[in-house]
Image (cartoon, rainbow, N blue to C red; front, side, top):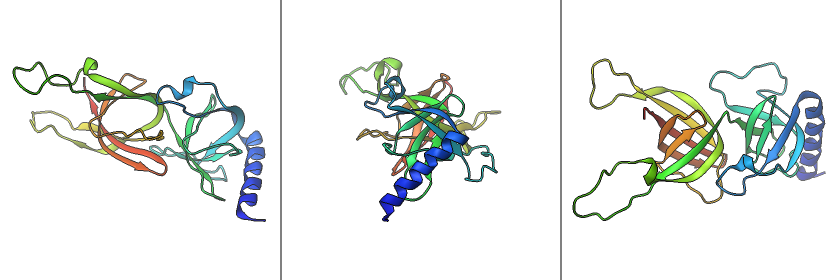
Length: 214
């Protein structure tokens, strides 16, 4: 028996375990940058998500990673699972003969990019970003948004001002679409952020962003 045959057996075993330990989840795969959860699901299956195989430890504050227990047949990295009982997760990694790494994605985000217009010379209108000057590049994507401990003061150093809140964001990658520093993001709570750092990894995007007040 080679590693692929053993992996298939492990996957089937995880599927059987999920029927006893988990709940029904819908399996989605993005076909465009817009609304991956608005397409038809690929399948219904049993799935369970835990921090350890013994089910002895609850997730800690700020812990988005989970072990996914389900039959991975037909799955790809970046696929999304939605369970009414356990929430929304995306598959971050599927190493051979190792646990499936999933990320709990509690928010849906939309990414916008500033599109410059007009000539560079002469008298110019307001040059800042507005809703009319931004183009949506991704919409309604599941993501994990967690508060970072660090923050940053405004250079104005006004009396009584507080640090701007900074966040770490994890989300699946899609095709050749790249997220840039300076892109704007809104979540399903209506909060707005600006992306300050990006890293594309084998497990998807890892971003840093600053919360905006307007």
